[in-house]
Length: 241
Image (cartoon, rainbow, N blue to C red; front, side, top):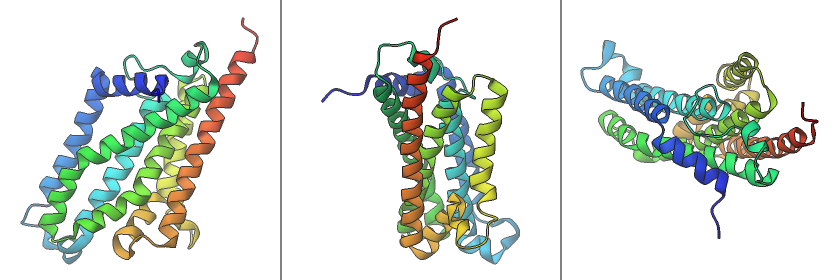
């Protein structure tokens, strides 16, 4: 079975590019700072911080930051040296479906990569706070699909919006809608928020709400993939000026 060519190329540049390295460095710096804050003595010695507050905050920040980096790289808000956008790939001989699958696979692999390098910090924080590692594993159930969906949407936006300002605006609006807007909704609609789903997974386990939310994000990634394929086809049909 041959590896998807778009995925292979994108992933290589995500791993070796200079800006890609800066993104990972920033990500690790933020996680390292949060892990440092978990060391005693606790800030303010608040009861909720001594219990699960810091681990929960760490998981939420890690999820949101990973989603931003994945979607920003896919949308072109953060230009990764060498990575081709949907517009660039539309001029290539690759079929639209191959391009779409490659972009979704890139977001999936990058989400897993960021989750993997965050794991040691999560283990440290969980150990210091006396939290079971199972809580960390449960948080990944809704977090990873959300990060993948964010990256797939970012790649779609890169093909739909030619203006950098418009693309960045829609990109940020999407993240804010999920992270802040959905969180403020009344139950059960607030479970559309990745923040709420991570909290539910950590505190209550992987129940029906968490699984439904994760499935929704995966479906959204699939819809974005279909949109990417359709956009590539539309670009190719458009008359060349």
